[in-house]
Length: 119
Length: 114
Image (cartoon, rainbow over all chains, first blue to last red; front, side):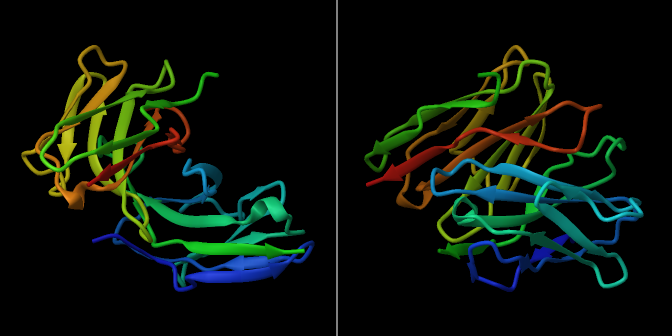
């Protein structure tokens, strides 16, 4: 069964510093997708970044980058130059099944990491 | 605003009452998902629609829960005879089959059962 593990319940970071949020995954699929979502206190899940299992380069989106280490089954999120508005819960997630294989493609989520950015 | 919308945003009900939530996905998205999120946990999958067909239901979806997507557009999630354990955030997400993998989430409906 697929599983996402986030071992950091909470993290502190100083404003303008970089921070890494850990995520490891378990799957027997050859093709899979990994996601990071941000959930502020308002509750909405905001998509941040995506990494496909066959993508050779690490994904980047502005201040977000995904450190993808396939052999270690890790997909850590790196936030550079932290801002006060980055304070939120962060969830790592995996797509279930092949993208175009007719599977449901539901997302399997980890338990999240609460990030607090300090001024 | 062309994002996913959900209504209501908050619902407080007494145990034993029925509640219904609505989700309006992004208009061209044919795939629609319902998730439930309890305090301190990540969202958990409840059910999935492709167009109007409900193709998968989680074991979390007891027989008190029913979901519909009658015309392949908006979806409703009904909980009958609510229990305190149903208190959670109910999230709806949508995507297109041939688009990127990203699921677009709505703001959620927070249910409190007293």
